[in-house]
Image 1 (cartoon, rainbow, N blue to C red):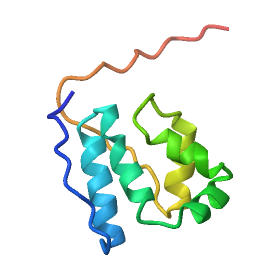
Image 2 (cartoon, rainbow, N blue to C red):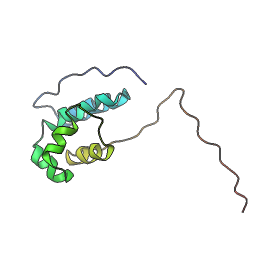
Image 3 (cartoon, rainbow, N blue to C red):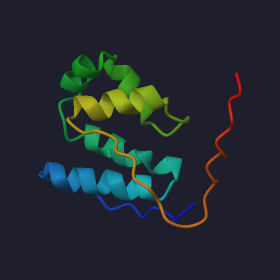
Image 4 (cartoon, helix red, strand yellow):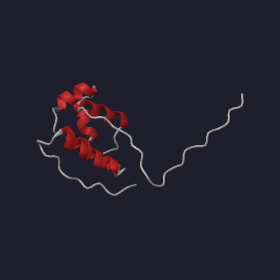
Amino acid sequence: MSEKFVETPIELHSSRRDIADRINRAFATSDITACRAIGDATRLHNISDIAREAELERTSIYRAFAGEKLLNFSTVLRILDAMGFQLKVTERRGNRAKLARKRNSKS
């Protein structure tokens, strides 16, 4: 795991770039509780619009980011998409699990 995520408030009139940067900083820590950054971002949008676009109930979105349980990954992806964001995977440097060796297939 990387360093601990330090929360900085998302301002009411934050730009989409500022919101995306904060969410990315949260993900960079590999700390699942940092997903609260997404919950904070939902509060800057019309929750009914997010619910409609994500095909979720509004109450499900509120509960998802209440911090009482871990989030369902598909819910996170749907909410990010509804807000106009996407998750992007990049390669990290450092010691990580090695790739599996390619097996010879003799058929």
